Amino acid sequence: MSVTSAIIDDLGREPPIAAIGTNWQLLTDQVMGGVSKGTMVRDAIAGRPAIRMRGDVSLDNNGGFVQIALDLSPDGGVVDASAWGGIELDVFGNGEEYGVHLRTDALTRPWQSYRQSFTADAEWRTVQLPFDRFVPHRTDVLLDTHRLRRIGVVAIGRAFSCDLALGGLRFITSPGVSEGALFMKVIPDPTGPGQESVWSYPRPAVAEPSQRRLKIVHRDVIIANTQTGIRTLETSHPPTYYFPPADIAPSVLRPSRRRSFCEWKGDAIYFDVVVGDETLRDVAWSYPDPSAAFRSLRDHVAFYAWPFDGCYVDDERVTPQPGNFYGGWISSDVAGPFKGAPGTSFW
Image (cartoon, rainbow, N blue to C red; front, side, top):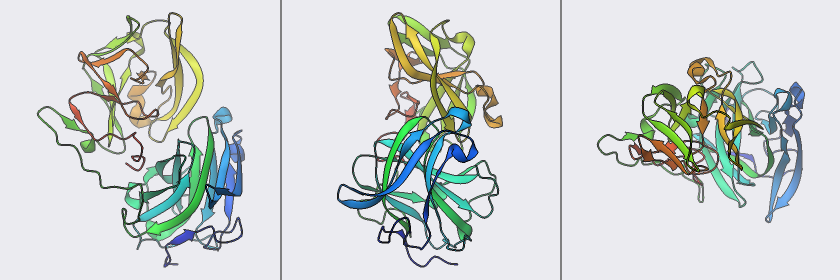
C-alpha cells in the first residue's frame, strides 16, 4: 500500500487511535524482563493536544527502554513510503535525547531497527528526520522505505526520567520544507593546513590507535597520561579519546551506577573520579565487552573534558564537545560544526 497522505497522526481522533486508523501502544523493557516503567496518556501541553509518554528508564535486568509505537498499516502489513524523504514530529520534552525507530518486514528480531535521535526541549518544536540518516541497528539489511511496518518513539539506552509529548507525526517530501522545523543544511567549516573535518569522519563510527600525548589534570593531580590511546571517530563528532587502564592514576576511578548503550559499541559502564575530597560523578566510561568492531576499546576509559581543570592533546588544552551527553574533545586541528548543541540532534 503506497502512502498518499503526509499525515500519520494529527491528534484529531479519539485516543489511542491515530489518524491512519491504527492504535498507539506503550511498550517497555518489561516484555523482556526489564524493570523500566512508563505511561502513555492523552494530554494538553502548552495549549496543544498531545500523546504524552512518561516514565523511568532503568538498565537493571539488561533492560533500558520505554516506547510508544504505531503500526503504519491497519492490517499489520507494510506501507510504501518511498515517495517521501523522511518524517517529522512535533515534540515537547524535558531536554533529554530520544529516538525514532523504524521497522520493516525484513527485520525478524525484536532488537533490530533503523534509528535516529533528537532532543526535545521544553517548548514545542518540529524535528525532521530524513530517511537516509536512519542507522541500521543490529542488522546488515539497509532501510527499504518501500516496506515500512512500524514507527516507535523511544526513550532508550541510559537510566533517566523521560517526559515527551508528541503533537503530530507526518511524512515529508524533503527535509527543510516545513516552517519552524529543526532541520538545516549543514555546511562544514572550512579546513586549514593540518586540520581534519568531522564531516569527513565515517558513520558508523570507527576506532583507531592514537599516538598523540593525551593528558587529564585536576587539582594539580595527573588523572591520566598516555601516548597509546585510542580515538573513536564519527560524522559530526570531535574525537573521543580512550585511555588504557595502565595509564590512569591508581584509585581515582570509582564505579558508579550509571549505564548507557551505544548502538555500535555496546553497553557502557561509568565511573566517578575521586581527587582528594572531591568526587566528580559519572565523568568517565568504559566498554567492558564491546562489539566486535570495537574490541580494541575493551576496558579502556574515556573522560568528559568539561569537569576537569584541563584535558590536553599534545599540550593543547581542548574544548569540550557542546552539550552534556557526548564526550568528544575539540582541539585546534579539528573543524566542525560539532553535534551536541541545541538543534543538532538530527546530525
